[in-house]
Length: 179
Image (cartoon, rainbow, N blue to C red):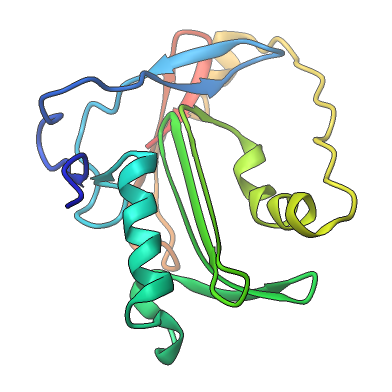
């Protein structure tokens, strides 16, 4: 019944799509549209909040994922004394987060078309909003203008044994971009 979910492999599926953005200097947002497919299952999935709600309902009322050590990439956590199963993902310009608190019958779904560091704080901040406490505060960042000739020195392909795929860094306008 999840008719608005699927896997984007080589082309965007037919339909309406949110434009993704990454943060730039200061409050600048830079529009993104992934120009290549992500690895199957690792960023190539797309969905909507209503479809993810159906998925979460299946987790809450179907076979519990907590019987496996690492259920389909979900992480088992405890925040503020509440057990949850959570999963997140990001693709250039997009963030997604879903958490199911089975003992509390609560589901949290957050989808964003702005990729930023806030995605790293969602899990604990949502727990605070649900169960009490103080949310995190984003760090202040001072933007610096760097000459394109200096930025160009960092462009290239980087590899690391721990990552396993090459990281391509290139200059797009006034920004270094990594893919």
